Length: 191
View (cartoon, rainbow, N blue to C red):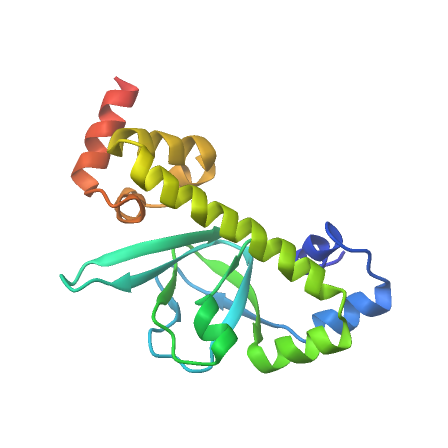
């Protein structure tokens, strides 16, 4: 049985068995327990993480000391501090496991080697990055266009798996709401 990463790539590209094995050799696997830090702010050896199992969030610490969640990732999603990864500079964000998580990760050096050896993977990563960019644009639009209540309902409608797997306070952080307000919205929804 092939691993989740190779299966995911095969959704976009055809790969031979030999190519699959060679591509896999560029990655390493790590397991993180719930609440364990995957990547620290200031880390210099940034990796790009493919979520094989579990759930993580990318966040920063705001000036008021509160964690501000910027992104979630679940199975078959990629997550990293993209600019830090591409420019090989220290990260501005943290990544933390929300539940027990298995990731496949690649360093920038290995990533460049991989793309040099397999140029067709440029297409895969381009598509993945375009999807992520499009999702970010929609999130920005919803921030300006929807009420706070509408933004919550839109989020749980688009990503129902998060409502079950992600603590309410992290969903609130992601949406720029307070946990108390999310609790009120949920109470109204289920009453």
